[in-house]
Structures are given as C-alpha cells and as structure tokens.
Length: 351
Ligand code: SAH
Image (cartoon, rainbow, N blue to C red; front, side):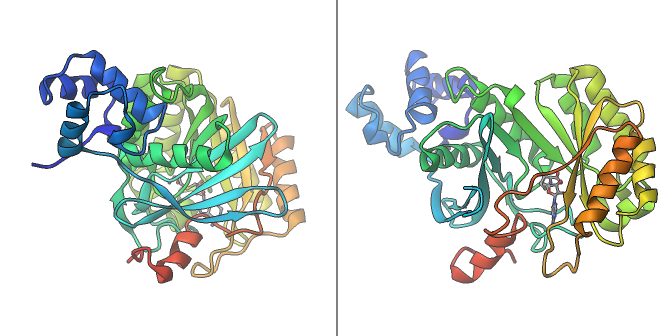
C-alpha cells in the first residue's frame, strides 16, 4: 500500500483520512495538522500527545516530507539569502529570502524545472522534471523560516516553475499556508507570478482569494512576445488582457505586470509607448527588471540610462512604473542558475 502524503492534505482532507483510513476521532486530525504545520515535527516520534500505538500506525501508513538546505549563499551587499533546497528524491529547487522594510519576503519554486520555454529564462532550459507537492512548497517556507530564525512577512511564487501549470497543488498549498490552524499567512501577503495561462487565471478569479497576481508580460505586441514567450501563441496579448481585467473586476486586486528589459528586443521608446497604450486605463503597476543575463541565452540588459528612460517614458504617459531594486546580485544571478550549476555536484541533472 502506498503511504499517504499527509503534509500535502488540507485540514478537511486530513480529517477525512484520519477518520476514514485510521478510524480515529476527528480531533486527532487537528492535532496532527498542528504538528505538521505549526510545530513542524520532523518525525512521528515527536508527536508526543498522540499515543504510541497511533504513532506506530502513522509510521506505517503515512510519510513526512523533508526539505533540507543543500547550499546557502548570502549576499554581502544586502543580506539576501539564496537557498538551494533538496527534496526527498534529491531533486533541487531554489528559494530566495529578501529583506524589505515591511519584513522578510520569500520567493519559492513551484516545479522542478519548467515547460514554458521562455527564451530568456534559465529555469526552463532542461524542461519540466516534475511538479512540487503542496508539502514540498510548505517545506520551502518552513525551511526558509528556520534558516532565517524569524517568520516571513510575505511570499512570492516567482521561483522555478509555472505555478498555474501546477494548479491543484498550488491551491492546496495556499489553503494550508493561509489556514489559521496551519501557517496562518494571509493571502493578502502572497503574490503569484504567471507567464499567462489564461484559463487558470479565469478560474483563480472566481475563487476571489485576495492573492496579488503578477503577470510576466515582457512585450506589448504579439510578434515580440511570441518571439520570447511560446505561451503567447496559445494565449495572445488580447486574451491575456481580457483575463487580467476580469481578475481585477472580480477580486479588486490590482495586477502587477513584470517587464524584463532585454537589449535590442523590447527596450526602445516605441516599446514603452506600446506598453503604455496597452495598459492605459488599467489600475495596475509595472515592474521593470533589467534582464539577468543567462549564459546559454545570449540575452543582454540595456544600460542603466536606457532603463531609466524607459521608466520615465512610461511614467510620463501616466503609468505607474518602477525599476525593481536589485538584490543579491553577487550571489547566483538569475533564478534557476544555481540549480543548473549544482547538477554537476549530485542533484539530479535538469536533463
Ligand atoms: N513562471 C512564472 C513564475 C516564475 S518566473 C512566470 O513566468 O511568471 C519569475 C519571473 O522572472 C517572471 O516574470 C519571469 O519572466 C522572470 N524572469 C525569468 N528569467 C529572467 C531573467 N533572466 N531575467 C529577468 N527576469 C527573468
């Protein structure tokens, strides 16, 4: 019999399992859930308010998910910490801890690898290996908090992987993360970044979760966007804008658009003007990010003054655009690169 992944179960699901599979009273599910998500037990043996007999049965029927730190890099410039985390099957993902005025912010991965194929991104170079389970995403949060020695204030799903390509697991993860009996982190402090899987964005809008949606836009015309983001051939810009407007209408949450500036691709004043007119009338925010060069990709970032001009042009046209503050630039460059580098040292290779 396959053992149950109990740390991936929402409280209602765990209750069903505890009362059904184990034939135990309902309150045991609450106890177990707190051990998993508040006290963060590393073994069943630690769960001392459960009887020895019950712990032995748990040992036989269920497993815990260990997420451990394989490497830790700390920026000397700003204290940003990048963790290479190892999953139970030895695959690795990256998380990043950043210090802001409002507290610690954590960026986590949602998949091992990615199949979206964006041309400037390191995470997708080896394709998708597998989805992360809810327990593994929670493990990223818990291990990062353990390393930091303090709770995080906010979370972004912006590491390796496309969260909406792992939709069910990401939703269960968010349910557990935000539940008062679990981690209790309000989804108002969580952002989910997507390359634009519109059907999923529409589903998410119906749930009205209070999440902030970040859209990786990177171009305001279909030709340029399809050239760097294959997803645009399935969901073009008009379709994406429809989903974004619907998301705002249904949730009242302002969308944040990500725009990575790539020299010679999407960085001219004409591109800024096209972007401003595309987003005209939307109550949104534009995040400009000078692209992180990825060796295999040959992408270059525009120089500082071109970035500034691009931002100024947008602001002059009435848009709310800021250049993202760069953190941790001395430790591991673009997302996904640490995992690739580490493949040579024993993490299963990203293909
Ligand atoms: N798949 C999701 C989330 C992960 S990528 C998404 O596409 O949004 C997180 C963000 O980093 C996205 O905006 C992505 O486009 C951006 N990104 C990827 N590679 C980058 C690079 N080399 N430089 C700057 N930003 C990059």
